[in-house]
Amino acid sequence: MRSMQPFDWLNGGVSALMAETTASIGGYVASGYRRLAGVQLSINHVGPARLGDLVQARATPVQLGRKIQVWEVQIWRIDPSTSESKDLVSTARVTLLTNLPTPEKMKSFEQGLKKFSSKL
Image 1 (spheres, rainbow, N blue to C red):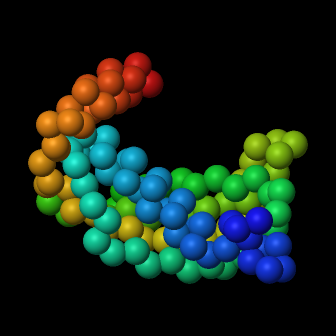
Image 2 (tube, helix red, strand yellow; image 1 turned 120 degrees about the horizontal axis):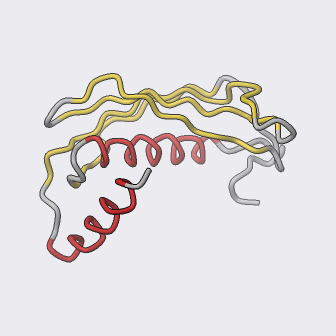
């Protein structure tokens, strides 16, 4: 499986993808649905996840500026019988540039996401 190392451990690149994606979703909502881009990602892999393990990413804002946001993301291995966090797999810090204009072709997506998130 491509998301795993040869020894069936979760590939670090997958953890990085999860961290940046999770922070970007939070940043998108926190910025008022403005287009954003990741400008820095630093990740530490501190524990394993094996093939078949359930993992969960949680993003917490550190700084929510008008132009720059910083997010702390933790990726946990989850106990499937309880859905509780079990072991820390990775911790990351993600910096986002958030003052980018939304292209016209993305406006309908933006409106749909605003409508969906207002119900949460």
